[in-house]
Structures are given as structure tokens and as C-alpha cells.
Length: 185
Image (cartoon, rainbow, N blue to C red):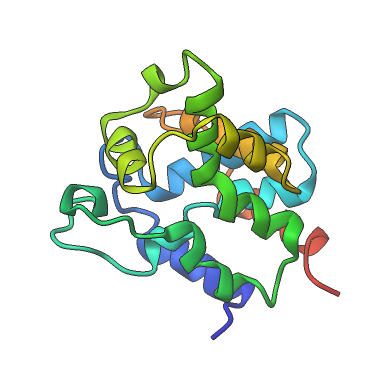
């Protein structure tokens, strides 16, 4: 089943208020902060949309208690892939590939940026283990050679910075206007 743009808005309306567990922000605050950072850096509309929607897969189902993260239960929820079939009828690879690759971008950055691992939250470190751990040299080289990998790395850096309690951002409507520029023909 494909999502409509209204369905995406409804997911944020229904689940955006839930805590981005392990972080001092809600799901919606995290999405808006990610999109704002992308916009401020002059990212293309497709990457702004990817930044807004990159964790939408977390809103499709819950695991365990509301205060638990899937990682606390030892589960890699594969949120980066779970959302793709629902978004594929709406958006092309310019939006979908950075979403699909943002977890592997964390694995890449841990392998290539000596300071990166130390800035990860406790939950992000826990999920890193479940997601396959840090890339080795070959895996890192293979990853960054893939189409859209550089955008996924940019998205990942915004993702990591988008956890600031009380940070003022434009609202959902401001960023959802970018959808029209990214829709499949």
C-alpha cells in the first residue's frame, strides 16, 4: 500500500509527538530539525524531503513498551527499508536512496572519521552493533562509491545534529512544500 502525501502528514500528526527515545526531542522535532539543517546548507529539495522523512519508518510500528527503543529489545527495526515501499510510488531515488542508506552512512562515518563515533548517543551506539557495526576499509570504499552515498552521509550528519531540545524550527507545512518538487511524474 502506498502512502499519499496526506497519509504522511497524518503519520506525523498521530505519532510525531512521541519521544525519539534516548534523545530529548520528539519524532517530529527530529524530522523538522533534520530538514531545517538540510535547507540551511542549501540542499536540493529531494535531500530536504529525505531529511524530513528519513525516520518515518519508526512510526509504522512499535516494539515493546512505549519507552523502549527497538534496540533496547535487541531488534534492528530496519526502519530505513521498511518505509521505502510506502514512499516509492511518490518519490524517486533522489529521495529514497539517502533514506535507505542513512544507517550505512553511520557505519561509514564511524570507519572514516575518527571523532564521529564519540559523538553518537547511547542508543545510536547500541543500534550500530545491531546494524552490522563499523564498516571495514573495503566496505567503506564500496559504500561511498554508490550513487547517492554522499547525500546519505550529509543526511546522516544532519540526523545526528537534529536532537536539540527546544530548538525552534519552521513547521511541517514549511518543509512539506518541497514534496511537490520531488514527486514522480
